Image (cartoon, rainbow, N blue to C red):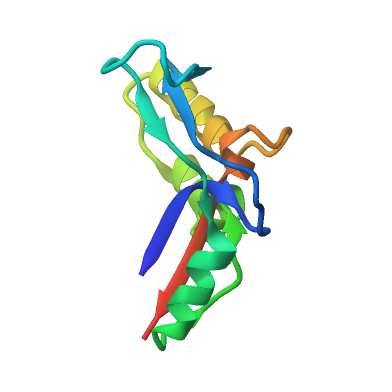
Length: 117
């Protein structure tokens, strides 16, 4: 089982309930029916539940580490692009997906948990 989502790896008692509209956090009482209501996964709990169900789990890692381990950088370098613009777009996407400059960058915000039987 492969789980990729944004969340925390440490236990927290704070609420992670939030609303998002156009990639910006909003009030839960604003924009009703026009925004996403979501929360951050607590991966440590998800990992424990998986283990309790008899699955073998690996350490939770961030999206950047997972994608780089899977060879995303090599694949981008090997890809054939029709135009220089396509190549630049692919490199921008790579940067966006793997950046860990801040804790809100996709590479660090999103976590990955692998569980096997």
